[in-house]
Image 1 (cartoon, rainbow, N blue to C red):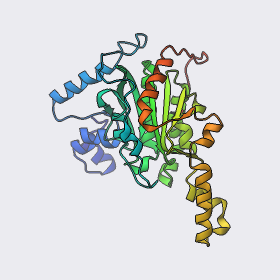
Image 2: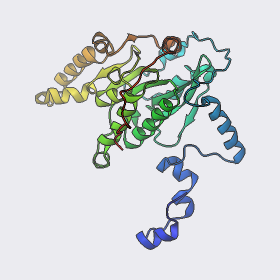
Image 3: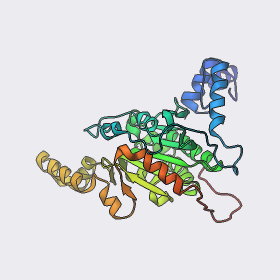
Image 4: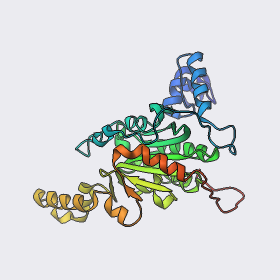
Length: 321
């Protein structure tokens, strides 16, 4: 797929590129994001399409499909209690958290090779479809950038269009800094995700596993964006930014004294690198044990099953395109 072929590209821009490089499956599933998934052959593709349709309702008024499951709704997953590494700089695989939470460990991922710092896809809780959005600490430490913001925003809009509840797992250290991101319009593109979550009227449940810093915390289905149930693990750190960066700004005059900086960092961590400050202000509904995540999400979805919320009437919304 391409708008103009390799010959036209060479004539106009003097770039030499093959058809495969310009518009092949790999290019569109990794670089452009135009295609969602690529498969080795048509059999794999058709089987995946069957799986995909299995998660979708017939239309936006019928409710999500429900299928029998032998996976207990209150299953406890004690391995999640130790999944967060002792160091905040160490990554872990968010796929594991998702698969240990959903029914039978089945997660249908969409756009798996594009903007890997955020994961999107479908799972089931108590046999009913949910859309899942999750930061991936294994890629770029899970930061939000232009591509990941657009990828997640499009998915949130899709779920909202078909009345599919959204479960969000948060471990985000912030937005990716740099001139390339700023000149590319990270403020505008990040706002797409903010807008999508804010406008979504489906049930929204958020679980903060570790980092939730600054504007990226706001954007990831926070209470401020009408999140219905916002939970945090005891390992959650909800703050404006990481302890070291914050201390170096607040106590700039002490930068030459490593001992003072270390002392201030420890003080900042003790005061803010936990979920209890946010919980005391009502931004977090409850601090939960990781092993009970599935149970809490299942209970939350039961409570929200008949959620009815309508946005004020308008001709159409004005998402920042």
